[in-house]
Image 1 (tube, helix red, strand yellow):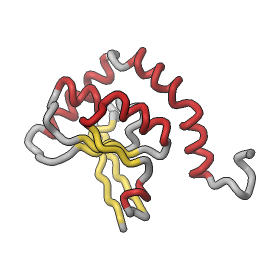
Image 2 (cartoon, one colour; image 1 turned 30 degrees about the vertical axis):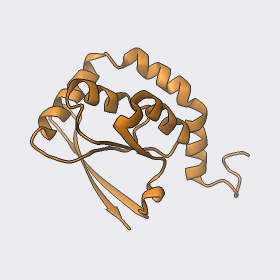
Image 3 (cartoon, rainbow, N blue to C red; image 1 turned 90 degrees about the horizontal axis):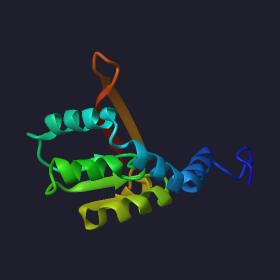
Image 4 (cartoon, rainbow, N blue to C red; image 1 turned 180 degrees about the vertical axis):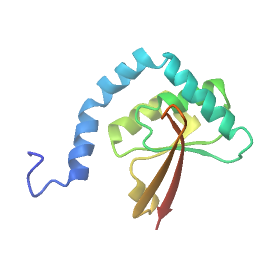
Length: 136
């Protein structure tokens, strides 16, 4: 069904796009995850979270590469929670992390009706922190 069809919401269209490209996206991430940019992101994440207890929520978790890196190199005891609109992306994350991650395909599965995000950027315009407020 075309995206501009009145029977397909924009959310459905995005979900379908990510479902159809999930495997190729995961393969692409396999080839770039060792790039310095991701090591830098992981180091900043680790330093910000080391004194903050609780689970890590990755939304959208995509193919789970960053969650996996965090689990393997930073803290394999911390509970991980992945959320993604795409069931195919969530399935890849589940295969990658197994029992180390709890997954929810979409925020609606959690009972949330609205999600607001504020993003904080550092001096290099890299995402430094994301503050999420979810409403039920």
